[in-house]
Length: 68
Image 1 (tube, rainbow, N blue to C red):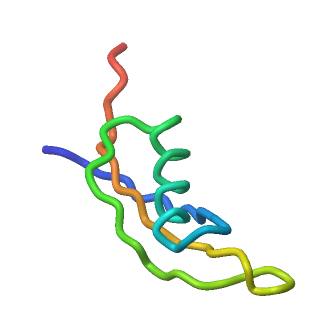
Image 2 (cartoon, rainbow, N blue to C red):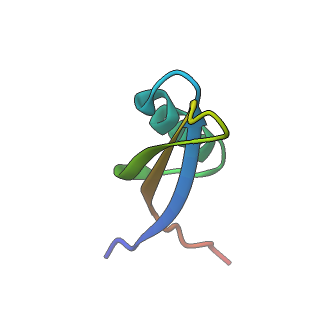
């Protein structure tokens, strides 16, 4: 039986909301294996001049057992 874990990440970009999502995914891929889904929870603008896109994403990945 497979077990998944979900983590929430926030990506940012000054270009677009899509780039903010991709930034979060790139960081997740650097430290997580077996990513099975990325769900975009919300996107919005932040910063002093509202010039930074932010994306809140949920990343789902399979939990691996450690053999002893």
